[in-house]
Image 1 (cartoon, each protein chain N blue to C red):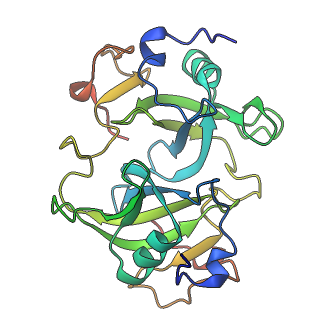
Image 2 (cartoon, rainbow over the protein chains, first blue to last red; image 1 turned 135 degrees about the vertical axis):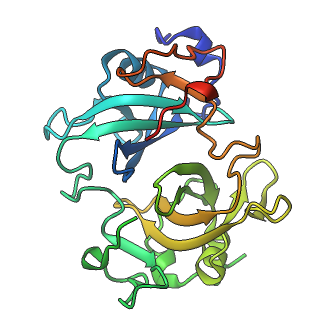
Length: 136
Length: 136
């Protein structure tokens, strides 16, 4: 299927063998990194034209609009492409939880290495550490 | 090669077919997303034990310590794992430019979709837009 993605943009993308680029979603204002997902050309086209965060699910092999079922939508303020064309950065307004677990971000639960200024234990593998979360 | 990475952590990683997880580096304090790269178990082990951002180069098929040649090192304050175990978030202090182009971040140069509150043109494919950068 040929995507209607702007050919000038499509020409700059460096895709994985299965046609995807990595996409990092960041909350506007706070700078929180909310989640990392994947986009094909069509997902990027829809994101750019609708300003609704739209991704490609590798497991389900289909497009998904973030929040379509949960209501936790992403309004996309800005999209940037990185220097080698294989990663996008989306600056968004995230409604509610970004993570399917109900956490605000997909990175809230598991801390592998703690800031040295913290005295809390680190979740070295086994347990989660949501309560020990430290602000960026 | 077996990595000395903590087996409890290794067991939680969901790697690509070539044994990698995605790693997002974010500047501590400002929240800037600096770059996205890849880690194998050994790169993660070294990052956790040395607090120097260490990655795996897919093109060169070897480990690299960020800034080893450029001096633009990353001191790693925090490492988090996402909900499905395939992406790491590193909160770092980045010395100088994170991007090999000399830009502060790998996302500075190319804006595909601008904030609606901006009146600047968008680099729709062809040209870069570093001068039109808007703060997160």
